[in-house]
Length: 223
Image (cartoon, rainbow, N blue to C red; front, side, top):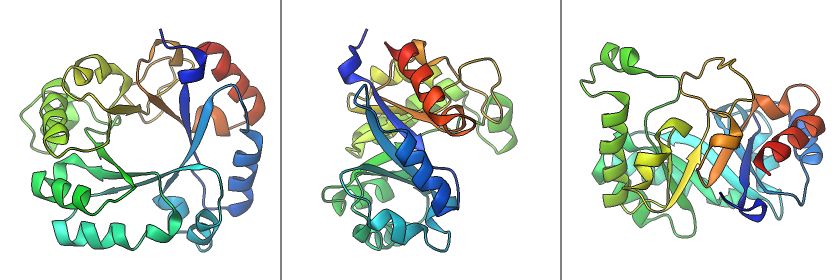
């Protein structure tokens, strides 16, 4: 089991309100675990979100845009975000090997994170959109692509970490963290004490309700 000093958590700042973002950051300060902050499209596309992120100092910043487009468009989009001092940035592995390699080539000091199969999808959902592979087999295939593209990190659900780790040796980031059996809109989830990834992504289980108490609860589970 990892020691406490190796525990790392991205707090998902899922809001469009600057006041709420400030509150989340203020109330999740701790020296018990390493904390980073994940900003998705909701915040980045809000009126003042981008400006707010650009002014953050001494924070590990994870920009979760899940880029999925032709190689040139993805490269241009990532170049347009350089003022934000990004540490991690997501792209969909399904954008293809050429796009992944192109993005990695111009990434400089930004860690490119490949997103595998979303935690909201199961085998039935994959069949609905035309995939013949199971979730497990698809993520194994995506892990091989991420490795081939030399990506810096990979996102998968906690359920897939063990077999992804056999293929992809760099950082693994897992959403789908739940304290109980209420999975909400995510179908592949796990209790934080059981997760063996490098980073956990925690949103509503921390930011809804009493933030400090929720974070304390998470730290206790990780200890």
